[in-house]
Each structure stands twice: as C-alpha cells, then as structure tokens.
Length: 227
Image (cartoon, rainbow, N blue to C red; front, side):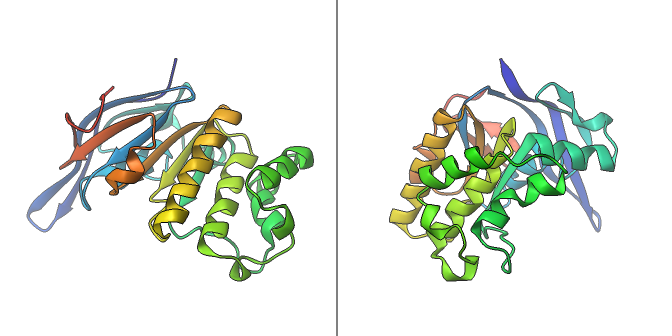
C-alpha cells in the first residue's frame, strides 16, 4: 500500500522574466515502511519535493496524497495539525531548542499538539538511540551525532505516518553519518516507520531500500527503481 503519492506535481517560480521549474511533473510513490533516498545536485528539486510531501509548501499544479489525505484540500491550520500528527521532520541543522533538555526536545511536538506523552515509548527510544544518560542534558553539551539522534527520537516519538529527513547527515563526519543512517534504518524497521530522505551523498543513499534520482525537477532513471 502506498503511503505517499504525487500526481503531475509541479512547482514553478517566476524570477524576473524567467520561470524556474523546481518541480516539473513529478509522479512518485512510497510504500508503507519503505526507506527511500532521493538524490540530486543542489537545485535539482529534491528539497522542494520534500517540502511538498510535508505540507510546508504548496504546488503550482498537481496533487500530494499522504496517508490517504489530499494536502491540497487543507487550509493552513489543517496543514499544521496534519504535520504535527502525521509527519516527523529531521533537519540537517537539528532544529533543537537550546534551552530545553533532551527529553523536553523530544516530547515538545507532542505537547504542542496537546497529546498524551507515552513516557514508556520515549524511554525505549532513548535506550535504542543510546541517549538515556543524556536525558537531562542541553543540546549545546552534545556532539553533532548525539544532537541528530535527539532529532531522530523527536521525529519518531509522536508515531507519525512518515518521517521526512532533509540532509540529516550533512553536518556530520563519515562515521557519524553512517551511524545515524544505521539508526534510521533500525528505527524504521523496529517502529514500522516510512522514511523519505534527501541527500547529495551517494554513499549515504546506498543505505536506503530504494534510491530515486532527481534532475532539473524531474525524476530520472539511473538512481534506482522509480515508482
């Protein structure tokens, strides 16, 4: 079953007299519990596609369906609720709140949504991601790899339908990058998560279940099976 689907997805920008086709007719699907890496050069459209899947941007044309919901039919408030409940985001720069400790950062999206925090599940995540001893520490006292693990825990803690990862290893060294990818794969399998990750690093992409390559706003052959 597909948890993500785009149909003829387009995003055009006007710059002076020029039209930039960030996405130019993308048909793309992701199955439940699949781990997909989208690769492409800077400006290829991969970040734009990820933002569309997460409801962070609206298309010029076409349709995005996530977990059976058509994002185009939602207003701003509905999209905000949808993101909090259905999508876990992992960013390159971690996006942690610096004056909150590890546990507080992890449960923040759940509390913002007024939902009950499953402390048993959070404790399990802390253990799996080797963060139990860091529970009360502030982000500034952690290494980059540890901060990214906190971001992974935060993304998973609300048990979203899909996790979107935007260059999550971009600020990490090679070993930390592979560690983070291994943790993502483990989390995807253990917690039955669907993950879409964007990266420009072909070595990192090889660790996903499937690779999709994007060039000039279009999915192209050669980067793995294209759905």
